[in-house]
Image 1 (cartoon, rainbow, N blue to C red):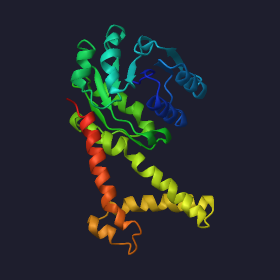
Image 2: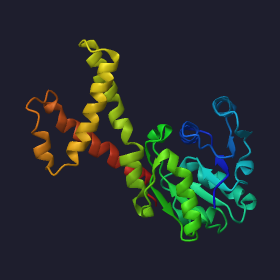
Image 3: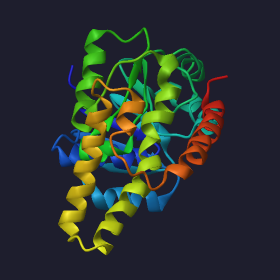
Image 4: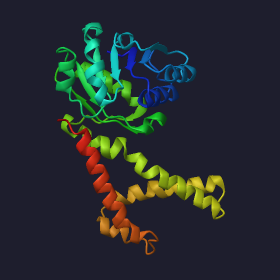
Length: 259
């Protein structure tokens, strides 16, 4: 059951990330329709992906495709989703890309339509290195599930998980790069300022980050790993950083946790 037509209700960052990932992998679906209320967003997508169709403020057009991605913020679901129920194909699959709104809640907003999945995408999907956990509703059989996973495969890993864990994945995986990127960019700039070439600084930071992850996955305790380097110039700031992780991310989790 290959998926050949895709609709995006919402043409923001997530749509751009997924379209870019497919395009880089030469796996862009045959037909893509994107709706959004902002003309500039649609113009930017159409410029980057000329083969797609765009619809200004017409979510029903995007909802008529074989697979329908809901790229909406959770507060917008109640106002935007119910109008889609009457135009969904009986054999369509609806995939929510948002936290907080459960499959059961989404089915209710769609008047009982239950061919639903949820995905928590993350930004590295733009280069095919994503980690995009998927939870499937009970109405989707093996063929439909395989079709969704095949569509997502060019974007990176798509583990099938329990729906109750999706919000935790949103905090740790979807938002996770934002906790690290600014530090890695700064390290690269510092390497350049200390005399490394652009290529050397980039390679040093990349290999350091990959090696650090490999070390974390070795048969060592966290204390043993962090004791491997005798000099820790930022050690005195670590407790404050960890406190910010716990406070800020705990607060975000409470906001996106399903009611």
